[in-house]
Every structure is written in C-alpha cells, then in structure tokens.
Length: 510
Image 1 (cartoon, rainbow, N blue to C red):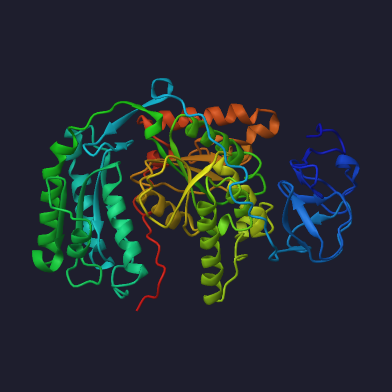
Image 2 (cartoon, helix red, strand yellow):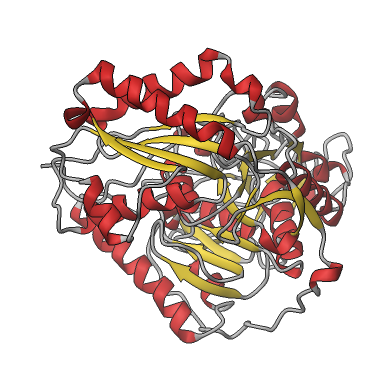
C-alpha cells in the first residue's frame, strides 16, 4: 500500500499480475498512484487501470479474471461497468491439486465455549422454542401463538430460554407433492426442528395443504414428545382454539427446556455458516479475508465452516475444486454450477444478474469479481464435502452447501443443515439477524462501521490502516467463542431474526 501523500492517495495492488489497482482513498483526476496518472475520478473501493487493455482483453484482480474490456482502456482510466463486462470463459478445475491434510488440535488443546449439550449429542449456542408452520395458511396463527407467550411475561420465570420464535414461510401448498420443491421444504423444516439451538418445537398446519405434517413425521420416523408437538387448525377447531392449544403446548415445554444449562464444550462442536451481503469493493480485501483466517483457525480446532451462495462463487469455483479432498467432491461442485447455468437459462436470466446496484455503487463490477471476494470467506483449508440445500452437514472441516445468493434463503439452508453460529460480512451495511442462530456482522470499512454502529459487531476496515489481517482473524475467532457462549450480537439486541426464515422455492407454484 502506498503512503497517503498529497497527489498520492492510497491504493492496493492485490496481485502482481493485476492490471488494475483498488482505490483505498478517492483518486482525483491528475493524481498519480503507482506512477499512473488518473484520467477520471476513481471512488473509494473502485478500480483504476494501470496498463493499456485492448477491447476484449481480460481484466485481472486478485490475479484472476474479473471481466473483459468492453472498450479500449488506457492507464489511469476508471474501470467499472462502462468499460468492463462479464463473459464466460474456461476454468481449470485442477481437482484436488491443492488438497492437504490439516493438523487438527487434540480436544484437550482446543478452544472452548459454553454451550448446551443436547440428549442427541449435538451442541447448541442458544436455547429457543420454535413455532413452525407447514404452510403459509397457518403463518398468522403461529405468530399469534409465539406473541402470546412472549408477551405474557412467563419467560421471566425461565431464564435459560432465549425466546419463542415464530418460523413462518410463504409456501407449503400449490406445489408438486412428489417433486423437488416438496423435498427441499421437508428437509428445511425438519432441519430447523433438529437444529441444536432449538430445544422445543411446535409445528402448526392448516390441515389440507400439500405439505402434510404427517408425511414429514413418517419420513423421519418422528414421534410426538414433550418437546415436539404438532397440530392443524382444521382438526383443532379454528383459529382461536388453535391459538389457545398452541399456547398451552408451548407453556408445557417451558419447564423442560429451561432445564438446559451451559457447560464447557470444545470448539470442534461449532458449525459456522458463512454469509456476505451488501458487498462492496473492500469485501474481498478486508472482512472476507479476515473471516477466512478465522475459518482456518476454527478448522484447526476441529470445527466446521459452511460456505454457500452458489451464484456468488460463480467464476471462483475453480479455486475451490483445487482444494477439494477428492475429484468426486470437486466434480459435485462443478455439477451444481452447471445446474445453475441451466436453471438461470430456463428462467431467461444470466449468472451475471449479480452484483446488485448497491454492490456496483461500492465498486464491484461483475459476478466474477464479486465471487472471488466472496470465496475468500472460506479460508484456505481443504474442501471436505459438498451438500445440497438444507442437507444435514455430517463432515467436519470446511464444506460447501448449494444455496441461492439471496441471504435469507441461503442462511435458512445453512441453519437447516445444522449451523449453530453464523458470521455475516457486509460492505454497504446489511441489516440481518437469524434466529435461532446468532449472527455476527463484520463491516468492511471504518466509515460504514461507525455509521451503522448499532448493527455492526466488528470493524474489519482497520486493516486498511495497518491492523494485520492475522490480528483481525484472531479477533473474529475470539468473538465467535464469546457469542457461542451467550454474548448477544447487535442483531440479537435489536430483535432481528423472526422474519428471516425463508426456505428456497425452487419449482413452480401451481
């Protein structure tokens, strides 16, 4: 990074092969960072050309292709959507070429946190009761049940319970009951019910919907118990009677759920969902890279980290296939990429429908550029597994789950897969929370961190001012352990999380 001098604003060259640099400070016309005179104003987080690039030639950032010049580009030009465009290109997947065996610390040497050990052996970081729905038709009743219990004041008698969550959604009927949509909703619903942060569950249906509760129970061989109850509005006798019965069912769970207490647990029991949203030109330089280092540390301590958002690793998947533990794992990821290419083509969309307008305002130009930054969240360890949406994650270490890029849908799949913690990086300033799984938010710049101080947990932008990335990664890992032990995140203090349960609707709504 060049020193901040008059006529020499700070910039970053992220790889010696790059033909662009990133503006840390706004570069005014006539300024000369790295000996190149700026021909246009380049805003913070945006890119400036350092070499002549002919129309059609590749533009490199991170040493990787982020797009192709849509017109001739001169040194000093601002490089963005007006002169850089997306195009498909061949990637070398080099399956398992960089895979390696990591050294995992013995349990006695692992970091610890204070968590809830369940009878199943799984470990929670929170202790919630969820009121779930099979169909949108029962969403209002489920909300009324949860609100009635939360507002009654009875939870003051049960200090070990974090709350009652209404987990409602907009589907459940008008779907192919033998198709992929049904299977995904079934996995997601049961995955949430089994998430170790959920100590009790009530599932409420209408009764005649396509997604039948009885069918889900049969599929998973589930029996009703003191902490798992189901009911339908039609069988119970309508709205008022179902609310009353639901409140009574939840109240009966309270003394049982409250018996759970925190005990010392090794970090190997943490399963961390990795998310980014409202990204900017700094995401792949500060927060995502620092989070990647924290992920490497979690893996070293025997834990699990789950990267997702397939449309936002598109163009960077070749960096993950190289790290795959086997060719089979790498090919599974590439197969998912090809499914997405077909999926978007059938919907008359493009894989470059991302970045969003806010991402572009923050300096991101193409999905290729965004993906390279997003993939940095996954650190550098071997890719041990690839999972479909909401599948239970059974593999320790760094793994991948196929999800959309839309944050609530993506995180819903990860939580259904078993994630008991979530870390969310943001450059523009995402407002997000994720009950029952606490979400730690990382800001990419000091300015946004200060502007949204009530929402952001950690400022990663100070690495631009000299804080070592390793120090920031250690800070994130320490925060992960504290929050897993019960420390509230900013989104929890604000009350986020009741509206962020959004199962993926893949197929047609009939």
